Length: 146
Image (cartoon, rainbow, N blue to C red; front, side):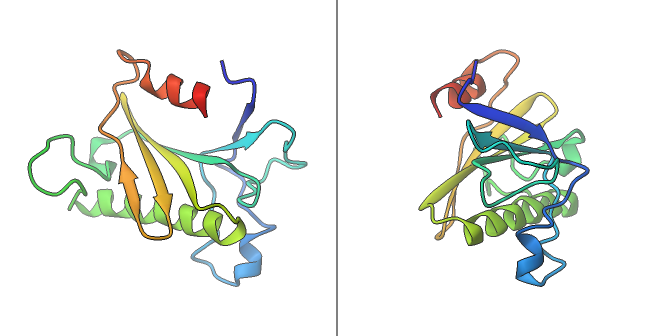
């Protein structure tokens, strides 16, 4: 359904090419899935944030959810594990934006049975409402139209 994109499982393979240039253990990243454009297939199983289009992170426990589903109060979770998840995906975004000349990028956080699509730029982020991907095609539509 997405012939123009290649999804690569990178959860065991850190980005050794780009993140080592930053000379920081903070950016020693291993996203769960890196999505590459057609024609940019990586030569190794390692993540390559300089050619990645979208980073996907999976979390299974509700305590790791970085965002709230209800419209009341802050969208960002105030729970420690949720804040850790947010910090994790923010570090992936910082590494990706530091190696690319895009004005914005997308990432996807998949939490058990729902997903969040996040549009990042150098000023901040725009976060979708929670998408129940089992009942609505919005997540598949996002990848299809990307």
